[in-house]
Image (cartoon, rainbow, N blue to C red; front, side, top):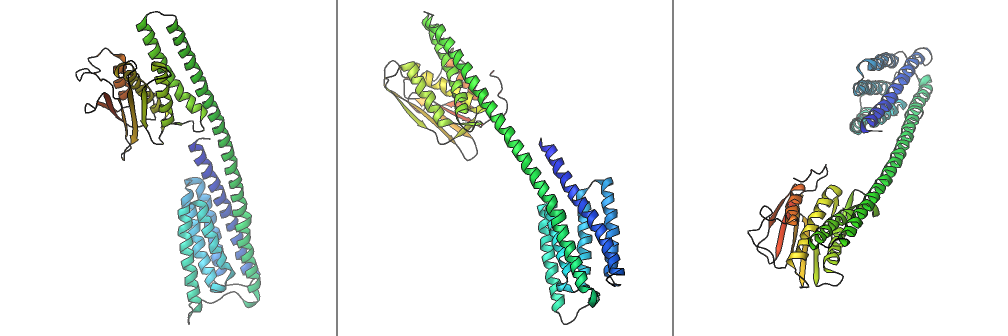
Length: 404
């Protein structure tokens, strides 16, 4: 169920509850008006208020079928109920009137509609009750109890029955049904989400397996080729495939399938590249400074490929042969939400005149193209020994554009 359908369902539930309450209260108040006239012997004010409310509320409820504005229907009935309840309360004993509990129903109806209306009518009714109490204890009173002495107990009984039935039998019953429907929908959504997460994990697992198959084929092709340059190209391609496979493997292995913990990914990738290029025993030191950052797949893969190229170039051309060297990788996020990657080595470096535009090196071109794919910027830091880059970018969540 999409968002639009859920909103429509909520509106239908609210409309059904408000209309049901309106019909019930209209019929009950008309019946109450008849009882006041013919049974309770109340001839002033109260029966006319019941009669007027019943008729006007029926008209208000029937008009909803034409304008379909639930807020308008609710506010009209709330204002009429508030005015009618105040008048009947004042003319049936003031603060001691049992009909005063009807004011609480207006608050409940308000919260059923929206939290804002509920808060509004709660505060308004609290003020009205205090004013009714103040009028009751004053030395003078501008209204009198029009309910005959012999009918007051029966009037109280009918008022309480009306309040209790409306609150429990109508509001309570319908709210319980809505509550059950809400949890039923929630359980269905959770089941669908779990199913999708399982399928997505399986997709990541299969992608990882396919990439490893490609890596194995490249490795096999490399072993069957005697050309050193071709072997290096195949090995570089294999490492690029492995860097992508690692992302999918981490997404498959972890609970959060939307983002990966980037520090552990960079650590594993850098250690793999050192073993792949320099062997199991080398003089390379890793200095990785990455906080607990999580990146989505759209950002993680191109950034991982960029790090792969920078580290590969450092191991192949910066720190030559068995020389001792250090590789620096630092990633942080600034106050503006921009990521800053500092990556480099303390090797021999290369001439300042050599750029991605003038060189024939695929690795150097890829580093700049991947920075552009991240929709960021890249500059070379010439103040330090070796080769160092500063890459600035923001996390992307939409479709990654193809490299130009």
